[in-house]
Image 1 (cartoon, rainbow, N blue to C red):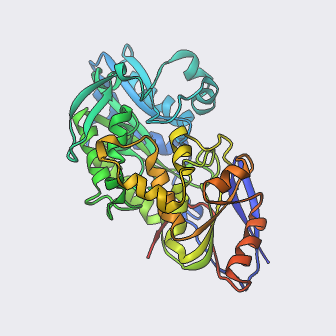
Image 2: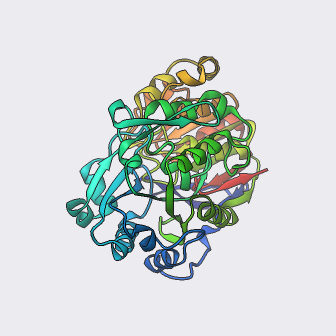
Length: 424
């Protein structure tokens, strides 16, 4: 019997798999990677050696209003480390700068003060100016341009009306944007609902190039880069993280060049050969990404690559924050996977519904596989209505899966499905 720890909520939960059934355990090489220095030192080195731009302190000289875009409560950006160092770098070049920290929520709910204190630390919350993106508050946004896809770009005024715009984030595989980080701070992070919805339209997400690890010809990525360039992002700081959410590398400088080097680094550790199994077990990497079901297609899409058609995916997701979105919940409960997909495919790009892309991903997956959801906080009747099978523990889910696929079924375990880029 092999005991495997699955990231779940703020800790882990075990799954026990017989050796005769266990075909593979797939993990990113971030588990073995030994960083060159401590977290703070890695960030300092990156800031001292930007890629394709002058140092941030030089960019800050003479600027009056500076906006620093950061991520919200659904992302594991280590802002307690990075924000103080970014602010130190800005103020070493311009002590009198008017700095605003802008939380790029995209369509997510507003980040609470408690969450800000956990993410940023009390010192920053008590002494810095913080503004939160509110995507549905139309008066906060201005029209910028038309994107390559034809979508309209509307961006928050706090991001537009500054003398220096910079972004921080972290890089990991993303199930339809290719990779997170870089340009995503602007689109979707700093845009209004209409822009985000159109960028994430059914047609765009259904593109064969809108996939984890793919940037070239990816229509969603292309719009995102165009948007970030149009609003003049002059500097980014992006980090790579291990399973403990600790910094193992950092990259700063030009929007595309620094992000590109970060992507190459993350790809070198995350990309693993796909191994096919009858049953695939995964998670969304624990908190914060597993706090709702809405975020979980990220890992489910990784499991999809490794699951034989007609097989079973066991998705471990605590869902402390429930389903994660009103529209997502309504769409997930709309009918069978086929009915959901048919409904979404008929929606014109400009009429896209907030959160439809995650329902689209699940509809695609549920048409091919049975999904067992291991969850502590989500009502099991609600799980059933969403076309999934509820379970309370991974072992319970595995026993259900054996009953469906037979006692000799081959099991593939991907403990953190978000960190792995599975390639056939």
